[in-house]
Image (cartoon, rainbow, N blue to C red; front, side):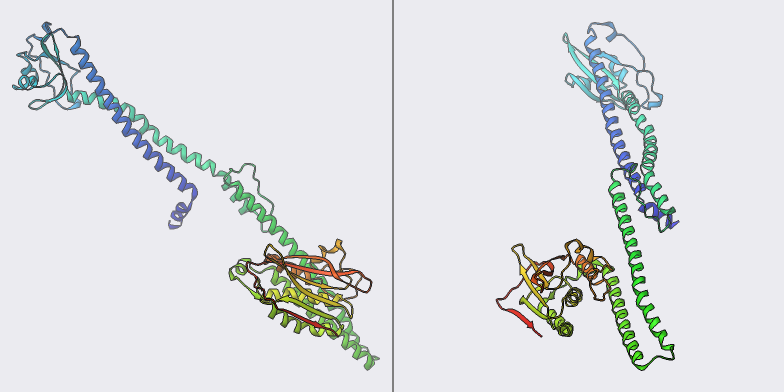
Length: 476
């Protein structure tokens, strides 16, 4: 019972019906009151006009104003027992006026009144009188107030009753109309309930009310995004399974060779080295896969709510110390030229991941003795760009968008990799609203061809820049 009451209270349909019913009822009641008062007043005015007209039509010398009559016009006050309409017409000096009005002081009191309409009260009755002076004779035309009110009420109620009768019909029509309006949403709810988890096809918007259509369009857009995300996850899982199957298969074959009784110690040592290298590559691949999954499923609202900020220079110092052994192995030059005291609107962990993946790729694909440069630029629009350049083989312009796809690797190079590094970078940059692009480097290789430049564009409210800069060159 409580659940049904809760559904009714939370139902938009029932709320709308209740509000419309209350408003319509309130307006109808106000309209009935105004109509009743207007009809009552107009009927009274009409009866006053009749009294005035009768007074003007009477001849003061007419015998009807002076005839001796004992007719009792003092009918009961009750509207139910009122006789047929009667009008009293006499001159003010008529000896029968007191008898007709049932009050011995009626003539005396009436003579004190001016010409015109008056509400006159006798001993036990109320009258509406009109006094007119014609040819030096004063004429009084009177009518019982009870009868006048009875006529006026009947006339006013004849106006009010249709409203009272039609009001329940209006309630019923409103309820049916509102239910028909919400039928489209009920049908959609039934359709969505009957769907299975894999059915993300868009909802039909042809017969949907205009007010609900934006919601349905947004819901269809969400279905499309979910479908794209599911397809992306399926593709990612498929590629991940393939990437993991290859090193595991290779490790299995290499381990199986230890069963060979003729295996020499030199070959064993060689196999052990290959197995270790395979395990290291598998470990790196798993780390990349976990990083990619974590980057894709980070909650954007948590990132934005944190108002994160990272000092660029301390992070670069730690990062270069971490990757320096890789550059030393290939005898590469690594130079950093950035302004002091730059704060970037991104968390330290995510910025570390972005820069580490970019720098590791630069070290990996730059030949021995090459050069890698990191520097920043600030434009007039309060944007800071960070350039990571190398003098390697670069990336063809046709493939610069493809390298951000998971597991995509450029053919023709002999470096091992998972193809996830730049995909992770792209995902994190999108979450932090950082623009990333690839361009030709200002550094050239031994073939006098430009290498690759990775450009990160940050929108920064305030950038604190000092005149000093930090330059660190490593030449091995």
